[in-house]
Image (cartoon, rainbow, N blue to C red; front, side, top):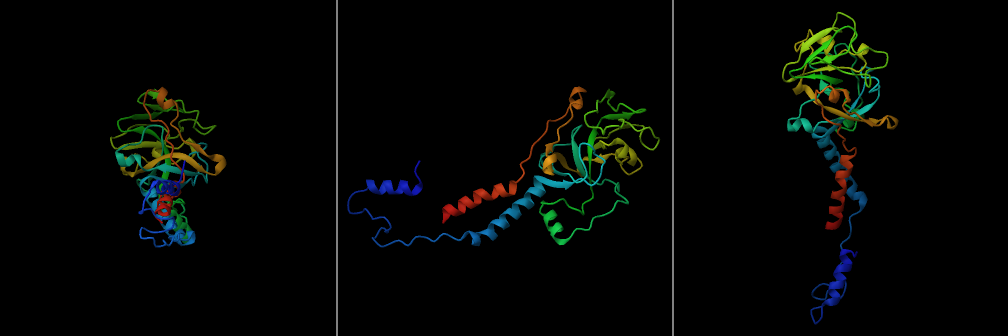
Length: 284
């Protein structure tokens, strides 16, 4: 393979007659001054700016990072885990499916009384562009158990049933927990999920204030689909915890239907800068 300059030299070799020009000369025989390539350090602020804009666009429309602040999703998620949430598919009308782990805005003051973080200026900036989870947004993360039209029921210690079909939750419910809590404050229930809503529960069943314990709120414990930020698809940090978050097999085995796991690239902003760099270099 030859470079663009080699190809040009080969073409000059094939030209004959008085119109041929020597290498480094213009059409009139005058010497051409090589165009000076711009310093990488002068371009660096431009590239950083492009990367920041791309990161902001990615956070807004594609993927956003969130931090896990509690134990309510153990052992699927641990405190301090960073997850990447797919925000793209909801833009195309996709709605949460049973078995998915989703992030959603606090639907009706579920987080009342929870401490609020006080981020510094750098953390605020990094969260604004999506490189760090936002400490100011009141969001929760739970597993979708029921969607619009479903009947979800818990009796005794379980199993949890959806539309009369028992779920085998051993693969994700916290070890030592029972699928249902034996209490009269929400642990025992039978609900019909309205269209446009979802019913969510934490995997650490005896340590999760979820739909069960918010049935007295405006939505009767349901989460409006419009409040769902997106589906958590990857545990991105810490490195030794890296994993995807698939839909458990029980949602397929029960015949309830579910979607498969999705995988999102991690470094989309940096990858997006690469073609820009190459294009600018070729233009010089």
